[in-house]
Image (tube, rainbow, N blue to C red; front, side):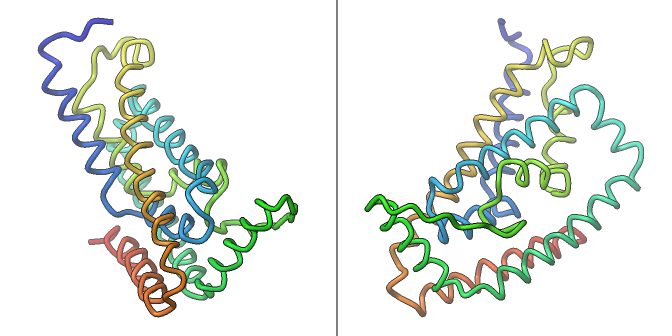
Length: 223
């Protein structure tokens, strides 16, 4: 599909908008950072795919008209903010009470046992980081930052309004790739920080910062 020259600027604006909103600190990225420090980059793969698929579905629906619907009914966004706030407060509490260093050490020990071909099944609690594919996908519907991205995006670039899926699939693919690459940077950063597990004080500071940043993200929903 050829891209009309008049749309090049708007496509660049959409790409930049998705990059800035995907790579800057937010609930998704902080959850990935926390989860990858605990369990490593590879363990976060389904969490990352769930985020990207969830955001892409929301963006797809926005091109079909969901964005206009949300803007027309502000009460819907208010409900989303309330539910998102409650979930993030619960998540912050769960993060805060976690013995971070013990969890990381247990994960590293498990990886070592797995490398030695010792199979150990660990049952995760619901909502424990990193999230499963389905949990990460569903969380996007409670994530006001994801709503901001997906509601605003169609106003930045849209080929034709007649057949949103057929005409705008290239934009959706571009946004999905940008989102996945951006959030993977946070998971990779968390994986790298695991090297500091032998420095308990540093890990405690990192843990406290992640908890405070998650709480701050919760508060900024209302600022």
